[in-house]
Length: 120
Image 1 (tube, rainbow, N blue to C red):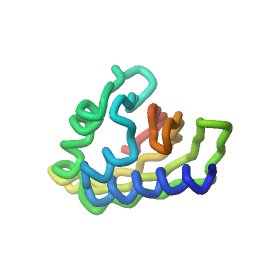
Image 2: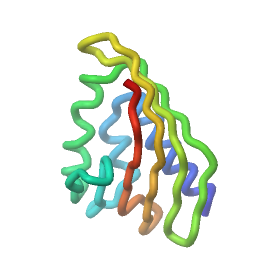
Image 3: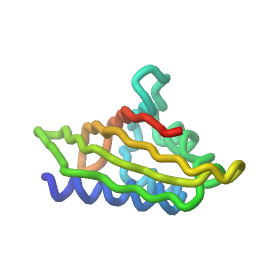
């Protein structure tokens, strides 16, 4: 399963780099839940996931996403990640690092939780 999970994370990462909403949506189940950070309200359903990511291409440029080792147990997996980008409005470079925790169903992500910190 780790190979399938690696494909999901890599597809998600490349889609984030490209700002490709359809490719991001392609890794999620129709009823997926996405939690951007531990204390945020979850986005529920693929339309809400798309809505969350729709502003990313307008706000982030020169995006680079990398993820680490995949740790899995049954339908769950986790990995660390690093995403760097330039803010389009200010030109400021941003370095984001954290972890992604996912549950899968039918070969797609049914729940994704991000725990991250951004500098600055």
